[in-house]
Length: 440
Image (cartoon, rainbow, N blue to C red):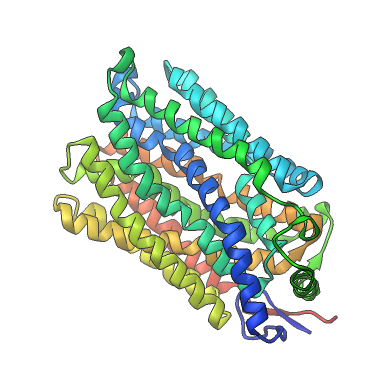
């Protein structure tokens, strides 16, 4: 039997679509995705709201752009160290308990960030936030793979990951509003209120996760006996196309590390965009924090729609390599153009829209690759390895841009680095074989 690896044409025979099967997966999508979507929104807002806090915090605490870049990025060291153990723990104890634990822990650390008083405390709390959040995203990807077969997974992951641009569309205006309207209330600057309020929102969602998420098909009350049997049969058929391996096998698999390198290049562009978008908008001449927040929602909203359409197109044609490559090149071109056209607000914004469409559309298609490759506890480890390796770019990207901006006084050198990383991503994914053979 043949099975797809990177999006080739050798897809195994899939169960025929029927009204019953279509209705089942619509029900699953409506029951599972909305809450995970909400959880990822609050997670991402807590991860990147520092990009808005920066607009006031650096002045208040006399921090440099380099310190900001290092602090924004040190989150990913904690994330890297604890990612694999966290995902293995999720596989063993179940998503309901572990995802709730992750969310409650990170919400507490996020609230504590309001007490940052200098570079050292900034670094420590950002590191602890990474430790707390480790395992959340790959855990959700693994969780979705236990409910949706691979031929539907890119679309579902895209719906879930649309939370990234939507979090920008919500978090940008919300962060700008909080910082501007609450500045000075009870003697606290706006950026402190930002961390407190948005951290409490994550705490509420984290507690709800314990009561809403379900670990097994058998435990849900909203599927009848026939629906459970159909879903179990589809997942069993899908599992036959994946290689089940041990945790050690995942670490020894060179394809896992190649995918990690590819994801590193993708994440370089992603975190360059999310951590520096407010700064790029301000550099184009927008002064008001509230207006920066509103404008930051534009590329986020447009790219949210684009990423779902692109993922659906990738699933329909069972092709992922070219989709990833084209999106990476779009992201590279948009990031460069946004800085080169930086003195023209609307031209720069148009370029940021192109960058956001390209960069935000890569990951849902990309994650269709490793989840189609592996199953079992080895899949939990492999997905975590790929994600944490890629997310080291979360440190490298903001630090390099901050250092280059301090050194040169402009964002252009940093954007050139990000564009090169995205071009390299396109080269790597197109150099991968389109499919592999597996005999069952």
